[in-house]
Image (cartoon, rainbow, N blue to C red; front, side):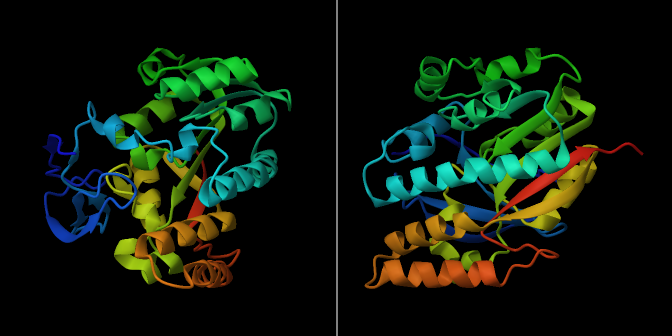
Length: 300
C-alpha cells in the first residue's frame, strides 16, 4: 500500500522550522509500511512526518479490525474494546457532570454513536460529526442521532454548544490549528471542551517504545504530551481546567502492543505493564496511557 505523502516543514504548535527526524516505526495494524516520527527542537512536539494526504488517509482505516468505527464483537481485542466502551460511558458521564450541566452537546468523531446515545438518554440535545459513512449510518439507524459529515463543521453556528467532546480524535485531524480555532468558535463562553488523547509520557509508552500501539501510525498524526496540550490550548485561547486518567486504556494498548511484539506470555506481561502504568499515575499528576483534558475558553 503506497500512497502520496506530505511533509511538515514547520511545527504545528510553535511554528518553528527546527524539526528533526527522531526514529522510524511500522504500521503494525494494517499496511506494514514504515513511517517517521519527527520532533520539534524548540517545543518538543512529536508528529508523524511525512504523512498520507488528507484525501488518502481513509485507506489506512479500511479494516474490519478498526473497531472504533464498527460494532464488531468477535475476537479478544474487539471484545475487550466493547467491554471498555461500556464501562467508559458511565466514567465519561461522571466526569462531564462535574464540569457542566445538561445542555447542547457536539461529539466530533462520534463513531457508532454510543456516547451520544448515552447523553441523549440523559436529556442532552446532541449531534455528531463522523467522517466514516458506515459508522454514521449505524448511529442514525440504531439511535436516531443527527450525524453530519466533517465538511458540515464550518456551517455550525457560533457559540452554540455547552459541551464539545473529541474522544481519541484530535490525534487524527490533519488541520490541527484550524480545528482548534473551530472549537473555540463553536463553544459557548462558559462551555466545556473535552479532549481524550494518548499520553506519550506514560510508563507503557516508554516501556513499549516503537511497539507502543498508541503510536498507531499513520492514523495518529500527532503524539501528544501534557506539555503539548498546554501549549496548544494557550495558542488557541483555551485553558486546561482539569486532567483525568483513563486507566482502562493502558490494558487495551498494552495487549495490542504485546500482540505486535509476538513473544510468549504477552497477555500476562501486558496486564503487568498496564498495572504499573496506572500505579505510577497520581491524582495530582496523572500519567496514564491516555488522558482526558477538560478545557474551557480563556476569559482573560
